[in-house]
Image (cartoon, rainbow, N blue to C red):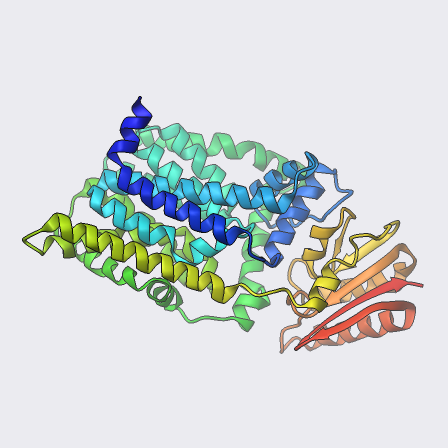
Length: 470
């Protein structure tokens, strides 16, 4: 009965949610390329649930999504299909939670505007079709905020810990929660949030201590990797104002967030401070990072959408007459524009996998593996249950290149296959790292001389090579 009353009271929102679900289901069956990180998470899941006999392990990655995907794999289900269903559920859950949070702090009309904008945020919408950590992480963050509103402080802290284990920077949202409580001089509730966070995180830290002899090593090394990885720091480097540009370019309606924030300060109420902090803290953190990837936008775009919805509400309220009709028209326009914007971004980004890459990724699928397999790309682990050794990890530089070259010289008889490609960026040396380039050339020469090249294809600037031990 309560459910029916809730549905009736929020019928406009559930019409919006149905539109979101329908469009997801329509686009879900179009082709999607397996991305680098998706391959890593699935391979880590295989490694975890096979005790290391399948897949690969990257200790700098958060463990939650790999654990879920590994559980799916060990049960015998399709990782891609089940993973996409999981992403869809997290996406819908995040939209529902944003609606409820916005409704709590502002008006229902604001919540409807915010939900329509957020649901079809270009990057959020696009990543909800891929096995990436951002969508599950923001779902957990919003769940933690919602529980915080309900004064479920232990659970709020625990869910932030889960979000942290889904994507490490999501732990930043512990800061806004504590700031709000400290401003309110509620130290008891602050302690509850911290206790919930610590209790859930403690078993993971103990496991890290046992495995790595340093409970903080994965976080330290992850920080080092993100500061040095060639892809976003050099090849795709962006200026400090990149996220401001992305906020506006991904949906022009986000310009209304300026009106929303101005109006928020004019009517300032410290009881409504949390949404602003949840926008400001991650935005400041990601802006100061040298690696500014568009994916990070997902962790604060719901709160941008919230203030965009607030700005639209202020704009609509400036009309003195026929407010109901104007609201209905504006909501339809916002939803229509957002749907078009999100779907257009999706179709512009999706492209068929080139045949050379497909042959390369699937090479190991039907092979009997009895010796070591080394790869410069983790995606190959998605299509085989063999254990994969990493050439590229954690950051491909002179030291990593030299280590692989030396291992290859001394242990060639242990190796069955070596897979190399330069398209994913796994074995690209920095331009000023001459030693890395020299070691890479030595490795290539050694492979050409001592191994049989069983695959050698090119597509554009990319090459795909597989070497088999003679």
